[in-house]
Image (cartoon, rainbow, N blue to C red; front, top):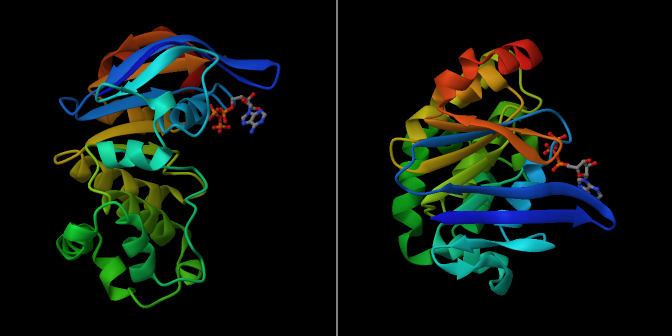
Length: 230
Ligand code: ATP
């Protein structure tokens, strides 16, 4: 479980998260964080991954203060973050990218790769192809597949629909729904409707603060969300 307690976060002298608290545990299926551009969603994921420090407050991952952990130790504990940029190794093959994802889990690599291929058959078909030659949707599936190779308990996906055509976005969301039967998904999205429909718990982040928390369907019905985002 990841527990975020009263964090303030800045870039230099500019504060972007204000006294934020929330938690996500393996009991959850999908937790969504939605909000406009620049609200601080990606920053929150970076902080949870140990990639950016807090000014005050704490983030604990299964009992350990993330500030004392190396980012790879956060992954080993079970929190994997697929960033908006996807960060694939473009000149490496699909298979090699998946292998890189298993750097903390060499022992289960073959077994997990088989599971990832069952979820995304296109990755098996293209396993010897260079990642950069794949379409945007395929690259997103590869990025998610690579995240799963670390066998996370909680998989955080930052804007998985970014840059994808509507039909491909729908495919990606179907896959996220499928993944959430096995692994808790923390979903950060600007596609408010899709992200809330899937969520059993959801937060609206604006200007670095949570303005509302509820079940996904209840937030979808809230006047504020309807007026501002739908
Ligand atoms: P987006 O969907 O556009 O990524 P977001 O909700 O994820 O939005 P963040 O990327 O976390 O928001 O950005 C929050 C604020 O922090 C924004 O004002 C942004 O300009 C600023 N910011 C983000 N990264 C940096 C950085 N590396 N240096 C300075 N400021 C940054």
